Amino acid sequence: MTNQTDDAFHSALWRIYNRRQPARPWEDGENLPWNDPEFSERMLREHLDQTHGAASRQRPEILRQVDWFWQQLDLAPGARVLDITCGPGLYTTELARRGVQVTGIDFSPASIRYARDLAAQEGVADRCTFIQADVRMALAEQTGQSYDAALFIYGQLSVFTRAETATLLRQADAALRPGGRMVIELLDFERIDKSDSNFWFTDDRGLWGDRPFMVLGERYWDTAERTAIDRFHVIDLETGAMQVIGLPDCGYETEEFLSLLHACGFTSAEAHRAWDNIGLYDAEEWITYVATR
Image (cartoon, rainbow, N blue to C red; front, side, top):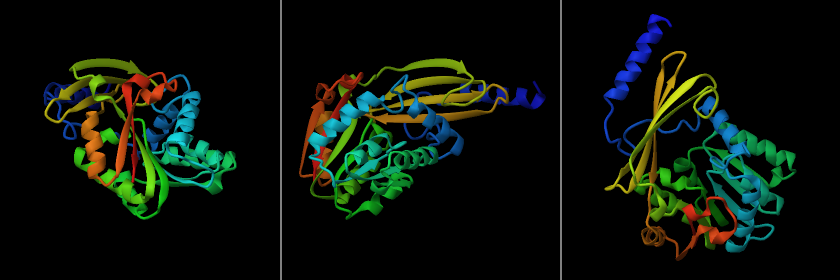
């Protein structure tokens, strides 16, 4: 190792030693770099990996969910759907195959590129529009578009503060036509891990990099905020450079979230536990809300 590398490792270890404990949601650690080209390519790889469902669910489960959307959202060919945080377009393209006009929004350049390519390969590009943008900026631009339905699934809404969540829900409501419906998927508050823990691992290929790295992770539950935060110290083992990522996961009790939906403009809302038992491997962890404008 060079002296410069030694100094970088030394600095990283002291930063870890002097870190604030417990970590505070939205304060400690940078947000995941969704729009960083290299990170987005690695995240896309995880989305498309059919050996796990950690980034996107495996295709058989996606098809079951789309069937469920079709019924719950009263979809039909020609319907217009807004897919918020659409990732690589796996749901978007499947809906388009069924004759739906779909607009997908996502921050990741790699995912949006893949989604456009997939739609073209499947012959449904004319029914798909993809927008690469932070949903906190892009969703407001969909106001008055009169979508028949909207999706905000796989817990993506929980990474935002409660204030941001309320704003996003109001914007989504304003993007729907009267009577339009929205599906939001959030972790069941009763099943959220509220314990504190820590972990570490090394690898040379994965979400955190494509050369040797070490991740020192810790998880805290903030009772006042009702939010978990996972803080990751990611160290490049060749250079000693370290990145600190904070990933918050805001928890909502069912009645709290139903009340929030009403407060944000939806006229009715209902909660479905465990995806109505449609056969997802982690269904028990989730509550799916269906809200009507």
